[in-house]
Each structure stands twice: as structure tokens, then as C-alpha cells.
Figure 1 (cartoon, one colour):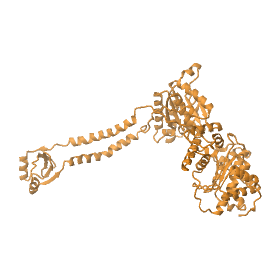
Figure 2: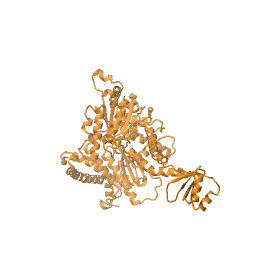
Figure 3: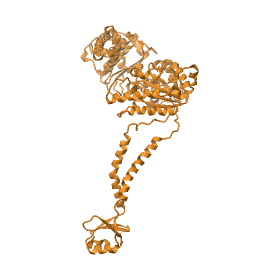
Figure 4: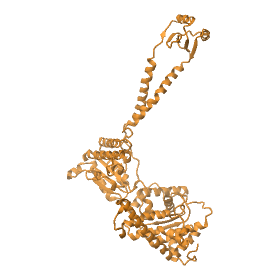
Length: 617
């Protein structure tokens, strides 16, 4: 329940949200290359200082030089009242003075005599005494005056299109296809591509064209990046990696400039592999938009098309694109001659999951009760990244409990924590009895429906509250590696999701106003399944209305409402029929917060008619 209650954990649904790559990636060594970026950051400040100096120094040097007057003449001028002000610099060989009503400066010898200041003041001459540091103060004031203009020039220089993107130095990955577990069929094809990249003459002997581009499609975490790195590592060529979103910015033409720069660098350092992740960010279908953003995307895509066409396969550059939305890519991008090979990377099957688990188990110590073959069966739908995260979190659980090795319990606790984004509370405190009882019946509804309506393997049900707010968890695992579901199986999954709320409904005497709001997460998941059912509904004419705009959405929504009411009524009828089993599990949960698979099965098989009457609160 949501809002502090329920969560029905199915490994399959969790795994789809994990991101990353299959396998273990070793740190790669980058070849030494001149650091032009560092050199640029030295040249820019030097240029700014040079500009400032060119402004300041002439102002100081080209000032009019004062006319020099002999000291005897200066004394005469003082007696004749022809000296208005004396500018006296301590320790300087000369001093300056001004005549009345004139800004012209004259200079004469500094007498450096005691009482000179008092003598001048007695003669009515203004006396300004300065120290040598005042000169540098004047210089600093001039510099500070012009510094904002220099910084503005630097800022404008930084904003020039194309200045903000630098192609990272090529890597030489040490990852090979031995680090990729599973997907053996795709791996064989990739090995052939790697060999032809290393030795183009292999294709020429048979008159075949060398592959210029490979498109990898699949959900996040299924190994797209790893496959690209493994291909580069297998051949020992330079590897350039970029995310397509890095090419797009606010300036028109900047993305296109960045694409050209990347491919120019790759071609200059061939043989090389250019990997572009999230290709759909710049490769989406052109919609003819003429606004600024639309033109920028179009220019960027055109630059990518031209870059791929601009080199021959014999140039030794292989482009690998990765996406999980291939249906959105522009047809011109994925046509033969550009991306010649297209591979879909599915989630690993049971055998591959076991290999991946063994791969990520290196360096970790596991207890004898951890069987990777069994764990592989329990992690249906997990990506390689999901499996890696699961074992890592299990290791963290072992550290928290100061265990010497990772047990199966640590792995199960890790899966709950990752799914619920929180921990099971240690200090439960005083519970609200009425709410706790409702949670127990809610989870019991999920449990009975899972056991009797599906072929999923029940693992555990618990009503221990978690730090994320979930008050109960029902864990189950689908049968291993089934790629297709029947409509009846999808309907059963919807009923399992509805069963928690339906159990509350029965407990409250089938009074809807007494049911909690804790099933919002169940309803959200059920709605997604109902939308899939609506596509295959005879009442919908077996049409996919997603392309029919608002009218199509209304049609699907109406069909979903019909299916929802039908399946809700069936769920309530199902629980009426098996209410004694629901009550038996709920009452046991009131006594014991967690039930394991064997105990759940035993209660369901041996459940007797409960004392609780229909409608009893």
C-alpha cells in the first residue's frame, strides 16, 4: 500500500528501472596526449594581462613630463609668491610644484632639508607629502578601472559558439568480450566486426562491405556501453565516447560544429570507435519545425549524417550508437550504409544472469547458503546493472551487520531495501491496532491472490514498516524467462494488485468509505496493465489508438474503465470465495510480522473457516 502502507515486490518490475551496463568494467588506460585545454587556460589570462598592460603602461609613460627648474629659481619663485603648491615625495631626488592658477607641473631638486615643510607652510605654500607606495596605488587604480572591460572581453570569448566543447582524449579500454556475460549470439557478430576493423582486408577478400555503423538498442542496464567498450578493447583501437545531449546547446550551429569536431578527431586517430549514447537526443525524426530549437536539432542531425557519409569504411572509423527508443530515430539515420548492423540487447536470461552474478561476485565472500543458480531463477527481468547493484547492496548489508560473509538473507534484505528505497524499521514502537490490522488484511489479500491466481513463486510477506513509509511488502518472482504473457495472465496480475484493496473492502463490510487510501501505488500499476489489455480487447476493435490523438486516448480510457470495473468485481468475488485463507494469513501476520514461502503455503492449504463474520470490523 502506498502512502505509508503497501508495496507488492515483483523482481521483474524493479529490474526494469535499474540503469548501467552488464559485466565488470576495468579502468582503462588513456594514451598520453597534449593537453591543449590546459594550454588554452594559460594563454587566455596571459592575453588579458597583455591587453591591460597595453592600456595602462602607455597612460603612465606618455604623461607630459614636468619642466625642470633650478632649485635657486624655485626659491626665488617662493619669495615672489609664484609657488602655490609643492608635491613632495619622501626620499625622491626630485619634487614637483605648481604656480598659482595653473595645473602645469614643474620639478626641481629635492633639498631633503629638515624643516623644509614648515618653511613652505610659513610662506603660504600648500604642501602635499606622499610616500613611494602611492605611485603603485595609482597604477592599481588604473588597472581596476579597466579590469571589468578585460573580464567582459574574456566572457565574450568564452561564449563564442564551439568554444565550450572539447573532444576528450581517446581511451584504450582493457574491457574485452570475456567481460560480457550472456548474449553469445550478438557477441559472435560483434567479434567479427572487431576483426574487420582491425584487418579490413578480411572483407575485401570476399567482396563484402566493411561495417560503418552499429546501432545497439535495449533497456537501460542491458550492456550497450559495455559492448561498445569491449569491441574497442578487443581490437585495441582508440575509443571516443560522447552523450548525444552534449552536442545540443542554445547557439545555432554549435551542435553541428561539435559533431564535426568529434569525427575529425576520430578520423585523425584511426582506427577508432566512436560511441554515441542516447542517440535519439539528436537523431529523432525531423518534424519540419522552423523555430530555433527545431533548426538546431535538424542541423545537428544533418551534421551527423554528413559525418558518417564523409568517411569510407576503409578509413578505420566505426560508429556505435545506443538508444532505448529506436522507434523515434530518423529513417535517414538508420538506413543501410550508415548503421548497417542493428542489435537489440534483451534482459539476460537465466543462464546469463548466473554468469553475470559469478562475474560480479569476484572479490566478495559469500556464505554456503548463496546459490547463484537459484538466485538467477529468482531475479527474472533483472538487467546486468541491477544484478551488480543487488550484490553490492548485499555486501553493504553484511558490513552493517558486521558479518564475515554475505548470506542469502543479506541479498533478500538488499532487494527489499532497493525496491522500497528504505530500510525496515528496527524500533517499531506502539502501533495503531486498527491500522495494523488493516495492513495485515491488505497484504493477505495480495498473498492469497498471488498464490491462487498466478504461477509466481511466493517468497515472503511482511508487515514490518519501513523508513520509506511502506507498511507491508509481498514478494514474489515470475517463472523464469517467459517472454510472452497471455491476456488471462495480465488480468490475473491486475486482480493481484486489486486484491489488497478488495481485502480491506471485505474487512470493512464492503463499505467503500471505510477503505484506506493506501492502494494508490497498486492502482497506478494496474492502470498500466489495463492499457495493455485495452489494445487487445475485442471491444476496442484490436486497434492501437496511441496514434489517434485525444480521440484515441478517450477511447482507450473508456475501455480501461470497463475492464477495471469488471476485474474489480471479479477480485471481490474471488476474495469472498477464499476469505478464510485471507483471514488465516492476516491473523497469523498479526502474531508474526513476517511469513516465509513454506509457512504461507501451509496456511493456505490448511486454512479453516475463520471466526470473523462477513462485515465484522
